[in-house]
Each structure stands twice: as C-alpha cells, then as structure tokens.
Length: 380
Ligand SMILES: Cc1ncc(COP(=O)(O)O)c(C=O)c1O
Image 1: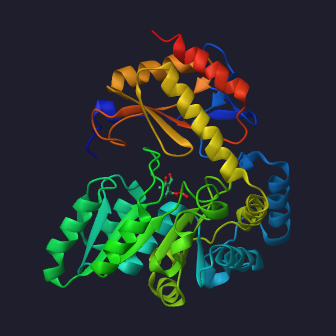
Image 2 (image 1 turned 180 degrees about the vertical axis):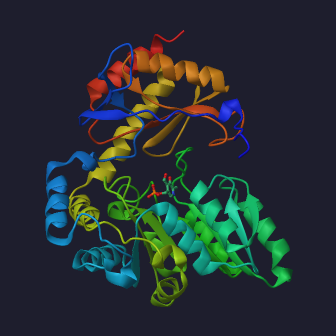
C-alpha cells in the first residue's frame, strides 16, 4: 500500500485526559507533570451533566435493566422501551410529531439530508456548517452551493437564481455555530425558504438545552415551518447519541429508507436512560438563561483584557488570533497556566482565522474566570 501522506499542518495528536473533578481534566500524558489539573474550557459538556451522579446512576440502572448495548439495529432486536420513552419525551418537549434516535449526531445529519435531498436536488448550505452535514450532502448526491455565513442577501440571491431550474431545494443551517458561537437569523431564513419553496434543516447541536424558550433551541418557536431539526445528546445533555425531530411523513420516510437509521446498532439503552434524566433536569431548571448570562460576563471580561477580536453570541466564545502558530503558542501558554482551551485551526476554520475556542459551562466559577483573565492579561 502507498504510504499515506498527510500535510504536516493537518497532523493532530489524540491525547488522553482523565476526569479530575467537575471543572478539571487531568492530563495523563503530560510528561512534565503527570495528572496536572487543567480547567476544562473546551468540552461541550455545557451543564456538567456527563459527571452528574444522578445521571450516571440512571444510565447504570438503564444498563442493568435493558443492557449496556442494544445488541443490534432497531429492526432486529435493538429497540428497548427506554428508546420509545425518550423519543416521546423529546417529541413532547419540542412539540414535534416524530422523533427518531441515532447513535450519533454525525449519523443523524446524514439521515436528515438523505430524507430531504437526492441527486436531483440542490442544497444551499451556510459556509460554516459542520462536517457531518457536508458529508451528508455528498452522500445524498445533491449539488452543493454554499452561501456566506449568516448572509441573508447571499442566500436569497442564490435561491432566486435557482428557481428556474425546477429542482428540489434544501437549505441547511445550524442554529448556533460551533466555532463562531454565532446565532442564525432563523426567522428570516425561514421566510426566504418559504418564498422559494425550499426545505429547511436546522442543526441544533450546540443550542439545545441552552438557547431559546426553556432551552428548546431556536427552532422551537417555528415548529413545522422547519422540516427537520437535528440535536445531539453529546453536548448540553452530557450523554451520547442524537435525534431527528420532524413530522410523521418525513419520519416514516427515514424509518423506511435511511441506511444511517436502519443499519446501525441502536443507541445504547444506558445512554438513553442517562439522557432521559438529563432532559428532565434541563426542563426543571433555568440553567440555559443562567449560562447565557455568565457567558456574557466571560466575553466582556476577555474583551476588556485583550486587544484580540472576540466573537460569540452565547456560551461559545472565540478569541481570534489569525496565525496558526500564534494560536498554538497561546494554547501552550494557557495550558502551562492550568487552562485547557484548544487552538482551532484550518481546515476546521478558514485559513487566517485560527482561534482559541472557549466554551463556558455551568460548573465554572467567578474565581476561575478571574484567574483566567489574570493569566490572559499577563500574556506577552
Ligand atoms: C454542529 C454539530 N452537528 C453535529 C455534530 C455531531 O454530533 P455527534 O457528536 O453526536 O456525532 C457536532 C459535533 O461536534 C456538531 O458540532
């Protein structure tokens, strides 16, 4: 076999991090100081639910009753009562007719696109959508056209040009972009889609649990005007797996035709049980509102203490550095001072837009914020 060649600047190393406690990772691989504690400013465990004792207990009980793994796809013997309980709970919460579970958001997105587009379709996707969505578009065989990030004029202009082609149209956006922390102007996007008779798919991965009415995501208020919303359990819900929410007809189409739904081992019953309790906790608390207000404080403090451009509308904040090397330097400096905030570089973000991405979590404290700001101020 030919030697696999990967450009040097694309090489990333996987490192193993242990769980120290709710706000910290311990760096197991760190040669200079094994088990050095690092404040977690990078995971998507926004409410710390992955380490919540009751959630873990629920997951444990779920696996005792229904198995750690489901053992097969839903069509063979993988379906458990906990799956339908979770589906119904999410459907009720989001007021959608049908919810379908998946082992991951990556897979759910592939299924969502195949339900709304095929090789005769044209997909208009925001410039910054997640890799899973791009993969789904490629798998569907549809023609891909990208529009500028959150740019309504560009979307409208591109759709207008396509109307004459009489093809089926699909627009894909995220409600909260994972690397920019920017919110989509969903109201306007929906109006444009309706005007041009385009389907709309919204990925709510980073918004769900936090943004919108009671953390129900940005899509909630628009209901069926959005054909499919996708959500993952791996972020605010602190678990793993994902779902698609849609109407009965689209749901049935996915059940009957989607390989990504049919030919995969069903979501682990243990994760489903843990997710169910996470959802209950999110519903019963005001964590989203609190997190958004705490995130505002973080952003303002970072702006006050650096000359960098700082972006992000919610709990994802990016400090834009530009050069890859300088971003890596800042990552190393922060890490030396006890903060794990990862340098995000091309191809994840455009060239020249390298950044330190910071995720704010419910478990973080004012003391951690103050320490972080002192460390940042002392840089260079
Ligand atoms: C916007 C977005 N969509 C989908 C996914 C995939 O979700 P999962 O991690 O459940 O596969 C991610 C995960 O990084 C994401 O950020």
